[in-house]
Image 1 (cartoon, rainbow, N blue to C red):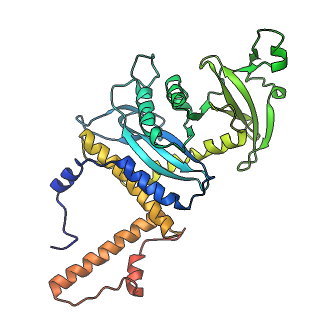
Image 2 (cartoon, rainbow, N blue to C red; image 1 turned 120 degrees about the vertical axis):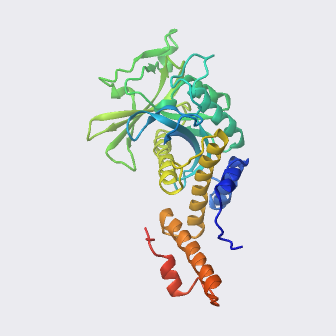
Image 3 (cartoon, one colour; image 1 turned 45 degrees about the vertical axis):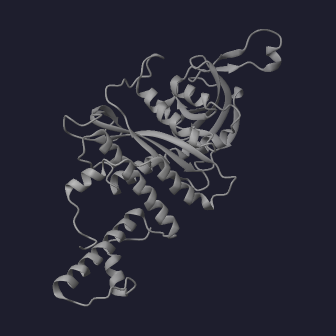
Length: 364
């Protein structure tokens, strides 16, 4: 039987029912890549969700979820991805992707009410004990919730996130002034008329010079804690973005740098959907869907590792095309040998063969 024999549908169904420790596998891939990472380099975590289109009435987890592409809630599936980002080169790696269950409120809810935020926090709390070198987790403003912060605080980890532009924050009173009374705070932050004299100017952002960085340690009455807050003022649009970290001792520039790296998780979703079939699965069973989602993200990890180990300047799409052409060439020559009794010897390095294999690829 040829090594390229066609697999039938039953084989795929059975394989998708297998148990695989995807976290352990992805950690092995990441650690293999980290052989070249210097000890001083920092690894941070990032978490985000993505909408998966899905039709049918019997699919596990089908519900109304937010679609960022269409900026509205749509009927389908949602996956929550936890990734690791190497700050030395900005490379993101998928660690775990989990499907969000249906019939959970998208709001934070009461402490005793199980919502989607509890589910996201559980995913993080299951993974962080295996990641002792990860101190910071970056996430967008949706994760700026009490439950999520409490989960990280219990594990001695810090969250870097984004606050609303009208966040209820207040200045801390100077320690010398506080010594003369019981007053702790020096009034609320008026975002419509910001008192820059109460902020520390850090300078321009190195990556985007049109962004001016201001920072201060502020108190949040809602969260009942202090935050290192960074205000990024856009000199062209005259607008600002408010970032916050539960670590009040982190530097403002490092905080901005880490949050900017958060966008790397979006590239994981993009590449997995466009190149690894993340959006294309006919399964309806919970375990088979989980196998498909994790297999897609792990395949992307392997492709990125392949790209780095080969020291290739080709895109992952080109590497994928090259792998397909190589397999197709082998298959074609095998069939010719079987049906025409030809004594063909394939040398993969022959210029003519390489021309076929490189068809459709391009260097970046």
